[in-house]
Amino acid sequence: ARTAHGDRGTVLDPGDTAGGSGSPGTETISAAELAEIGLRFEVDGEIATIVLDRPGKRNAQTSATWSALARIGENLPEQVRVVVVRGEGPSFSAGLDLSMFTPGGTPRQDSLATVAALDDDGFQRQVAEYQRGFLWLRRPDIVSIAAVQGHAIGAGFQLALSCDLRIVADDVKFCMKEPALGLVPDLTGTKPLVELVGVPRAIEICLTARTVGAAEAVQLGLAEMAVPGDELAQAVQDLAAALLATDRAAATATKRLLQGAPGRTLEEQSAAERAEQAARIRALFASS
Ligand code: CAA
Image (cartoon, rainbow, N blue to C red; front, side, top):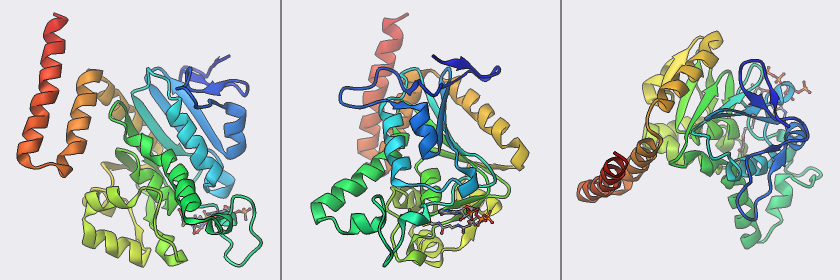
């Protein structure tokens, strides 16, 4: 059963599961399983919150984190329109759990050494599975907001990038560490990064693995807003409330339209506007 959590809505009991009935073939995930992985999932009306909850390890992520994120996405309750992703403790996420990354060491079952031993098809499937945990955050029927404080390194930076919007605390430190470790960023972060800052700045940020702070993040468009750390939760809540004030069908259609714009010519985009508007106007007048 769901339990009331103060006046902030509901959280899942250990025996409860994330999501509603789930789509065919997808399994819901229990709060106890999530806790073991270092995640929490809370639903309060139309707002769902995913909490990275391994503060003692600076919310480092494992392959289990990514699989769990995918399952949360697959089973997201239908009423949810805003998904907040945040991290417990001083940092949003220190990225890949370095115990998975042991070149030359003794591989554990979920280590990158195990992935390295897969044939090409197996490798593709495995990494695509990891990426599934990030990609659903762009779905047009929801708006995802990353609330980012402290370090957001590697997979942490990419998780923030996989959200539609980023609100950051003034101590934020974004860092794309992968190239410095001999890797590439492959958790779906390169496209949003380039779309936000352009290819030259993305090259500079990734290949130097330098830290981007709050003021620069806002200036580059990496964050919508920077606020003092103790105002982060409120700023995210205010933004969620403002987003929820818009009609859901119009919000979904508009997000779909905006997301498609970079890949279309002006003429194609104009046609897409007409198609979305036809559906909207017909729906509005059919119900009036
Ligand atoms: N993996 C596993 N454990 C981590 C971790 C990580 N990525 N980051 C921090 N921790 C652990 C530390 O080992 C430490 O654990 P113990 O207390 O048990 O020793 C605990 O978290 C606290 O760490 P610090 O004392 O270092 O905390 P800090 O606040 O002073 O520093 C930090 C935070 C700057 C994030 C620092 O911990 C750090 O640099 N971590 C490593 C970051 C990193 O290199 N991540 C990999 C990015 S690449 C990537 O993500 C690749 C990919 O997607 C494929």
